[in-house]
Length: 472
Image (cartoon, helix red, strand yellow):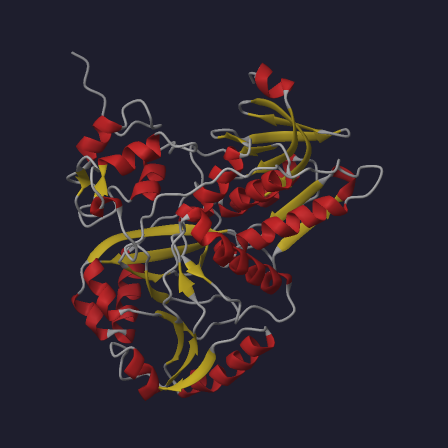
């Protein structure tokens, strides 16, 4: 293993392991508190693991376990997102949601869910008859028995938010090391983290490694307090034309295992159907399969019959870091100045900012002889605003002097691509570029724009988008 002199020379206040949505939020929170932060990510870009695939719903916590830490952190994370979204230019599509009952048993469960939501402190809940719900959303099937309206459930851009968190952390001096996998760690009053890029030293650390949270704890020398059991979720993305039939989030009556299959609008103008909940051992590969995708489409058509005529734009699958316990698996180890944020699955996007605040409070509670030094917040927080990709707000193509339209399906401009490539946290691979710009994510899935994108990104992505020319 080659050691980087630069990494050995610098000692950080905090190392964050994992650049998913939780890790990015933790980096921002500690940087705002005045910590010198380093983020270690084994992938080529942020959100390379579980965080790249989710339903993009900003949850209220109406169905979270009463009195749970998850409920507390979802509510705290949601409140902070709403407080900072204008500052960071983050979209919010105020859809509201219906929890839909399709038989009498499910209808009977709605009162209990409403009572739980009220006990959780959630406002804007109302039981609706089938007629009332269909008056608000006429595309719902006539089979509907009843619904619970949840006004506060909304849709966000799931990728711009964590990008904004890390960008703000970097603006405050944080260092982002991509392609850097943790191999082992040793604590002797400070952490010596052996990585594929060399040794990183830090006074404290937060493990936010998602699908590898238990593995990272073991590599740090801890006895893992949990076991990750990957749960695959397959999704279908329907054409933007479907959005006129799905103005609200349509939720099923949840089960003890999963929140179930959701039909919801996206911030980008499409309709999303999914996820499934499939246990598997593989932590890397999330394959789609035709029978499951057809089952998703069939279920969507049962709920909103008009979707039967809508073409499919894309399909994908992701893995959620479920564990051997439904609850968040959070461990503080004051004797090693370490915090593990594990088992963060379906509600991670909503709770990320809450989790970050919780991690900082745990860190500040570490007492002598290993109490961390007091942090001094920066006098000035540099302004950070990420580009808007939501269809509900003005896009770059609607503004003058954008250069050209590179991706006509998603109306991505040359200026948006150049801005992403030159940003403080540029994309490391094509997936990262797609998540930052929407280029190649439309109907043709890059068939028409990939050649132009390959030209524009030459030498900037790993692996390169262009196919190497054959040797003579």
